[in-house]
Amino acid sequence: MKHSIRRKFSLIFIGLMAGTILLCWFINTMFLGRYYYKSKTEIIYKAYDTIRQVANSETYSTEEFGEELDNLCRRFNIVVCVMDSNSQTKYLSFNGGNELETQLIGYILGFYSGTVKVLEEGDDYVLQWLNFGGNRYLEMYGRLNTGISFIMRTPLESIRESAKIANRFFAYVGILGTVSGGIIMWFMARRMTRPILELQRISEQMVHLNFEAKYTGKGKNEIDLLGENINKLSSSLEKSISELKTANVELHKDIEKKVAIDEMRKEFLANVSHELKTPIALIQGYAEGLREAVNDDPESRSFYCDVIMDEAAKMNGMVQKLLTLNQLEFGNDAVAMERFDVTALIKNYLQSAAILTRQNEIQVCMEEYGPVYVWADEYKTEEVFTNYFSNAVNHCKGEKKIVISLEKGERKVRIGVFNTGDPIPEDSLPHLWEKFYKVDKARTREYGGSGVGLSIVKAIMESMNQGYGVENYQNGVLFWFELETVGEVGC
Image (tube, helix red, strand yellow):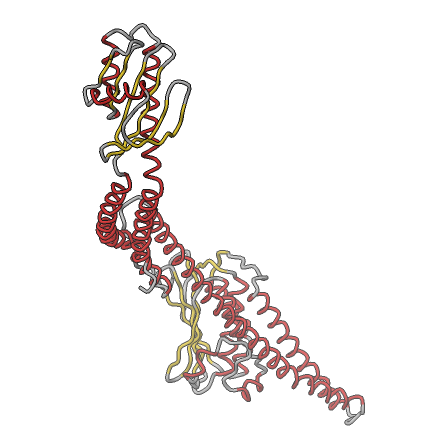
């Protein structure tokens, strides 16, 4: 990657180390000498305070005084010499006090050797730098108000040379530490960024709507918690997208359904207009003929009136059927389920339709069935059978025979109405149940068919959740529907 986090981590670490080393080098160069001199001065003053406190106490002439000064000399690398008021030596440090004894006597008598630079003068002491024998010292001498004289000295190494050596060594160590630390940091960053790269791969898969990839880290650090949240986000997105796709499919279906409904509405209006146009035109024409007295004889007037009444009756029948169909399709006509004998219903209807079949010279055949009790809406069942039987009468040809059958099934009875005649074209079978669909429109007009009867059959049977259908035979057509039985079918 061009902007890799691993590279940035390594560069930041190396930059911080190099900056820290440079800062330390600068501080060493600028302030190490001052800090060293200040530390030495504080040591001298501390030793001075110790001598003054001991001189004013009762331990001055005891061994404790010597032991305390010995500890001071060991801790801070100083040389001490102390004399009483009679110039008698009371203490000489073990690390070179003899040399200071002579120096102190010289200061008391007013002469001394070496180059000095006075730094500070107090009431009972003088603090100075001393160059002696090619070496530099920080020295303090003086006489206390108790008459005790003292001198102390601590060497001053070449701090500048020491600082140069320290800085050079520090630079070598810093370079080595920076390089080795950078290498270690590179591999550590690689290990740290590995889960981040895994999260990047998972997010890339999510961009392409692939939610199978999951983070598999087992730790509990921030990256692992982020990985767990990515997994939850992946599952949530997968569920949301699935719901959106489902909703989208449903929306497409709703749109298609709306388009289909619009088309059905347009077709319905066109069909209704077409169906009503002919009878209205006939009624209008014959009514105008009556008004203009085209034929004054009573027989003609009676014929005109019969035509008007017949067409009005057809229009009224079609409107009634449309109202019935509308109520069924919108669920406004409740189904009243009851127990009744469907055999008796069919026989009663056949008796009332006997005149119609005799006029059309049709032979109706039905075997002798015993009572068949079913659960259904009796009025709607009769309407289904009436529509089937009317179609059979209107399309009966050839032998001019109608056969009524009842076939027993498992808790079902199938009622069939077969008529001899021409089979229905195969491409028309799926459309028979559509409103206003007519296989032979010219012939349908002859017997006053509206094309709504089978649509009513479909609506009724679906409202009762029962099956219905049509089958072609070589010598005719069979329409059937099923009902739920509550007893045995008798023969």
